[in-house]
Image (cartoon, rainbow, N blue to C red):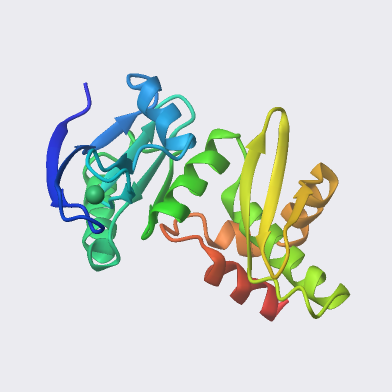
Length: 211
Ligand SMILES: [Zn+2]
């Protein structure tokens, strides 16, 4: 069972003391209910028992899917390099155990959750990050008022989708053809990031600005 810890804090609306259960790690095989909560975006959320305010907490959390062979560590930005070091030590110590694994670190809950959703959908997050960055550019090229800044991958039923931060709501279905094209066009960059723990918006922006 996942290690649980009770986090206590005060409601930021009414100051009522609130208790919240946090988990050190989630194993997708052993904790399918926690996996679902993470995907549903309810894992970090709690409602204040007194005033009903919706509160969100952030705490370090390791997500491990042994079947799909990936681990994503969600950590506060200050702990980012500590966790990267932990991953390095772990890989040096047990090289065979992490053979074929995708290891990622994310420094905010939104990126963390999105990483898990992308990898859970059996997609390559490096391709998805480049895909989103290119789409942001093409949205802005078509309409300068859109002011799109970034995309977020999500799954809707059996469809892979991307929604965008922009001045109005933009949602697109992921095109498998474009995905494959990007995968082969940027193959060198993608291969070069094989051991990157951080694959995010900034990484993708740099790649597409060079090409
Ligand atoms: Zn409250």
